[in-house]
Figure 1: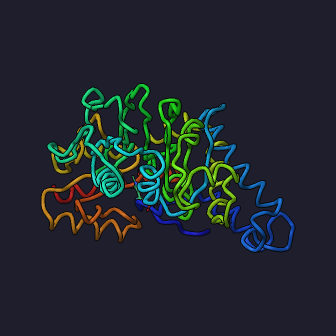
Figure 2: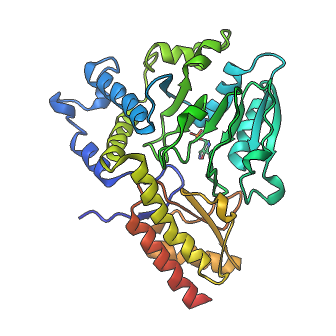
Figure 3: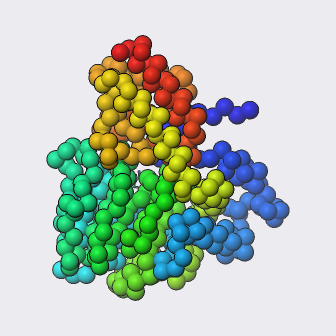
Length: 362
Ligand code: PMP
């Protein structure tokens, strides 16, 4: 039997074992064609089916019946940081950004080079320990849009609910929490996510865009940077990252087969409870880096009293088969990423390790 690590990587991250096994089985001969999916045209009926199926599954899982298009793009979520203002900001119109941490900051910095921006709310004063209250978010009636980062992968914070921005389009970066729980998509004009956490391997970026935004987009942009280009061609304008989309399709089927987003949320709550309980029950040995009501279901961040103990924690955890627990270099400390594909058993093992480590070092 293959020995699998307790994989808590932040992204690229764990994929479901069942998906990897199926991909392995189909690797050299996809559906009996004597070739892999990477060796055939993206305009073949086999690939078109994968592409269509994946788009339909995203809509089905998110409960989207009409009014939105699912696009598969390239360049990562980082390219969306630029495409959004390029496509949706008119001259003289400002775009609002809610600053919740490093990723929101990257998004606004990119937008600042393109048009006018304003900070609609900020968690900076709290050291990004909490998501601002929804009522604190300034929605200017003439704003091009308001942008939020649903889950701050580095800080370990997540919106518990989304703001209501009325007629101003709400745009959400859901890169690190898409499909971890049900979402009311109707609140959003656009949702985007790089695939490499909950959706599959890196290489494909999903954008879910409301139809009316496609009509308003700027026309003077390079072809590849227009949402309209990709919507008109079912995301097959140029050669897509076929293998990433293929694996994503398998991941989407896995989510559906495991009960969809309600089930994902239930399991993610159970998984993260194990680890948050280990933090909260440690009598201060472990310190969570985010306030309780802003805690993430996907990235759990915590500190231990001293640098020395943190080093020891990482060393010992690695010896016991845990991977990826070192915090992001910007914030340090520890981070456990518990995406959909991270099994309950891995989280249970981590909680047990944390309790044992505390007893030995507390
Ligand atoms: N936004 C968030 C919330 C992220 O976590 C990441 C990647 N970790 C990005 C954007 C950037 O994504 P990409 O590497 O696909 O450009």
